[in-house]
Amino acid sequence: MTPHPLPANPRARMPSAPRVRFAPSPTGYLHIGGARTALMNYLQARRYGGTFILRMEDTDQVRSTPESVQAILDGLNWLGLEWDEGPGKEGPHAPYFQTQRLDTYREHADRLLAEGKAFRCYCTREELDAQRQVAEKAGGAFKYPGTCRELKAPPPGKRAEDAVIRFKMPSGDGSVSFDDKALGKITKPYSDLDDWVMLRADGIPLYNYGCVIDDHLMEITLVARGQEHVNSTFPQLMLYQALGWQPPEFAHLPLILGPDREKLSKRKHPEADVMLHKRNGIMPEALLNFVIRLGWSHGNDEVISREQMLQWFDFSDVGTTSGVWDPKKLLWLNQQWLKLLPEATVAERLLPFLEAKGIQARGDARLEPLVRALRERSNTLEEMATTAANVYFRSGITLDEKAAAKHLTGDSLGLLRQAREALAALPEWKVEPLDGVVKTVSEAASVGMGKVAQPIRVAVTGNTTSPGIGETLLLVGRDEALRRIDAALARG
RNA sequence: GUCCCCGUCGUCUAGAGGCCCAGGACGCUGGCCUUUCAAGCCGGUAACACGGGUUCGAAUCCCGUCGGGGACACCA
Image (cartoon, rainbow, N blue to C red; front, side):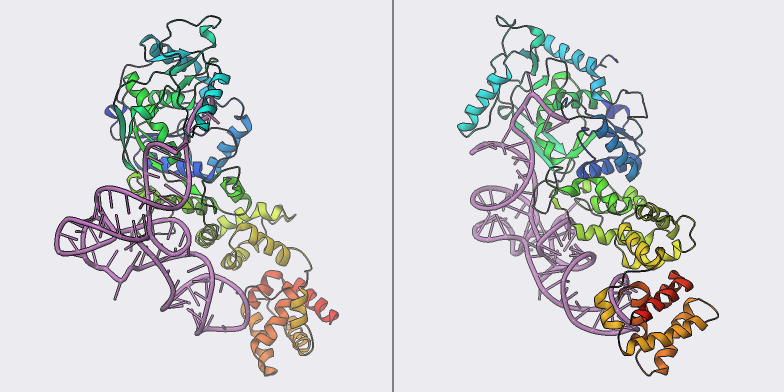
């Protein structure tokens, strides 16, 4: 492991190239809030020619799993948030898994111990829990009482190897403060802080400790994370001070709230799962666009591409108020992107959704025209695939009974029969002549075009909504369309 | 309970003392277009939490109240 460098100021060394990181704990899927944090860090790095580091904070022995590591990697990859250093991209500060950096943590803890800036604590969890309960019952928050603070040697019956290492908070009246890029200046008096645990007896670091050691060693210049971490910034700052290190800058991002106005959590909010949206047919462009507008804006711009984000994003424009997840707006944005992206791209992305419905459409000439017709009336790829499969790719259709009752009875059937004959007689199965049939038949019968178009539509698609008749018939194909009309006719 | 942060339409937001009797977007809604549904276009609905200051003038600054959220672990 690298020996710790002397007190250094990373920013002094690389003033213009930011080094930022996303440091998730692999205890589940990629969280939507994490995705936004990752995005903003990514943008910052890319915009200013910096480096985006991915670090796995896998020190939660019970909840961290390799599957979660993979899930997070998959999520970031799907979103296209490429990291420069991290798992799979070993850089100068490897390894990027905290559980592989234990020697480093021990080393710095020993130094702090030797300098009297940390101490071994022999209190058992049971003792601490009991004290905590007493404190809570009294209506206050628990603060470590300093039991082992001045101990020079292990108490009788205890061993140094079994002790945790606590940070020794300076006593006295001071206070810590920092200038948050998003929130402004925040201050906390020493008296609100206590002697927190840095290292467990088994050498696994706790968040506040591992985070500081790694951020410094990895030469992070700006830490951007969720607002739930503002309070942990204070003990971290104390550590920087004790180690004689220059702290990075901080930016605390507003929280993303669920419909119930509470922080989006994996437990209570299914929409917190990035990949759920993928499965639902939301595209990365839309999800990223949606998520960055929560807590950040650029004038009145709503539909924002990655290139524009890259041009516009800055942490100093990040807001301060938490935002509520709005599924309707996500859907709207997704449709915007469905319409903006090249047809070929959307078609390609539609394939797996069709496949899930048992349809192999790769190479099908109708795919792109279908996308062109359907993206005007679909919010998601899933929705588009459902319509495509049910109406255009499968043979036969399911007639909606209500629609049939309204448009496939009495006079309508006569009109449909006339239309069928005109259609069958057409020399060319193309949009204009196809639409022309609706016109000629309706004129001949002196009825509105709807009287002719709707029966055809219901007969051919099974329900009352679809793209224009000509387009629909073209997409369904001559033989299949005539078959469906015949089936409808036979039914009446 | 303590500490921290926050408080503009239902939601996301613009607004950095006069340009604001507050603008955009989603949603909802009326209309146009129209062979249906969409899309598109035009219009409507709806907000500066409250109370004190400061100022010629406050959504914008200060204080208080209330409200919301977050953090208070040998989780991160």
